Image 1 (tube, helix red, strand yellow):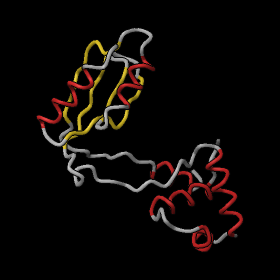
Image 2 (cartoon, one colour):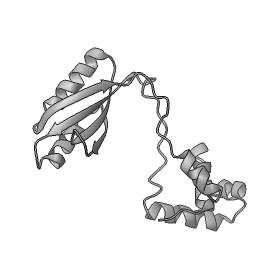
Image 3 (cartoon, rainbow, N blue to C red):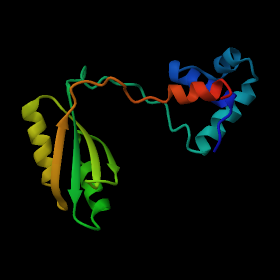
Image 4 (cartoon, rainbow, N blue to C red):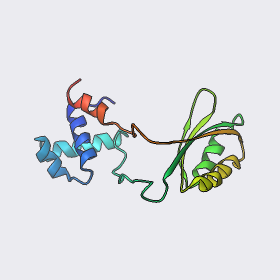
Length: 156
């Protein structure tokens, strides 16, 4: 689905102030309340807008260590391995990839010792053949969509 400038401006507004109501969004955007509601309904139905979760700081929650693992798995076991990985609480994301590995996993831990436990849990998943893990030292560019929305909001 293609987003237009109003969609982008609405999403930027909700990115900045996620708890903003429909009426206030309409006021700030200078459009009718029904227009905002229709846009939100369409964006939700099309799967662009998936929810309004709070942004959490995992380090403040005690998970100050982030690591990434490339997993090589047995052929034909991707769904089974992904399901088992989703049962490990510290596994935050799993992506099927091309290249050297089959799955790219982002995980968090409380300490190096805790990371070893998490890696042991990952390696213990049936179907995981090999892993290569790297610890993130910092996050110079966090996950973002703002530049894309700003480009659309400007009409570009």
